[in-house]
Image 1: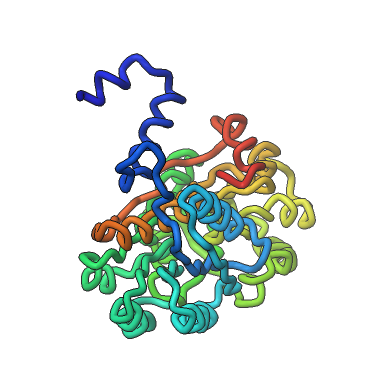
Image 2: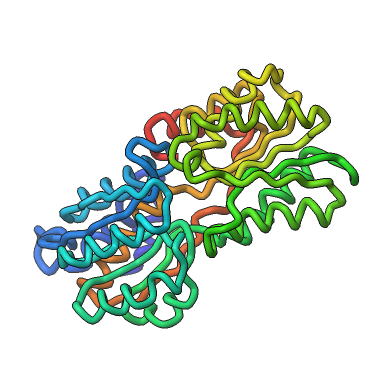
Length: 337
């Protein structure tokens, strides 16, 4: 039967229902199918601290997928610290779950032996947020996939979009607040800096400390002090979702008025949506962490149940600004966008 013929007369809602039914009912041979993830367990490192805005959206997606597929989900938190991520992986490995989902921040060299050990024990592994290209090349046929964005590409794309929309000129002062010392994770910060410098801007770099990485509220003093020393800065680019979400508060505390600076960053949350609406943040690249959580759980289940190889899924192609925030803000409030 031609599925296109079936779908052509349906509403969008009905089309989505059919598509998701097809994905999650591959094992069905009778009218009532068991969930694809029945009797499976997945340990998932969502990266940030408990309650962190970015990590919470990743967790929301993973939790929804686990509910849809009947998976027993165990969530781990690592405060964005690579060493904690490795410790979490070892803890998960000892528990012998069906699968483990990791943040790729520690890099290939840190994960390689652990991932090999997991696959040798029949445990599926996949990654989100930060790619592990060597591991992917070696283990993709076994089901190791990646859901997220290219860190190097995301930095370049956001910087180019900010330059296009903000109409800056050579010699303008910019600040990049990011991370330069965490393997592939730092490619995003490097991409921001190199793109701005190629456009002729004078770029200051501020390293996000481990303490601020964990607790974004500590960023208030960082921004206030920087702006006091650099009153002529025109552009601030923030390579951190939780810090982007707090930029409205940081700038208010520093006495900055809406639209006085052009601010661009990553990832959505209710606080970020408010900062966009109030003109404290002008541009956000949306890597859609809900999809990272959701689709990585799907990856583990499908690879384990049906032997599918790893998928490489790019979740971050769009930008959020005043132009589309009214549509997206309610979804951010629900922890979906």
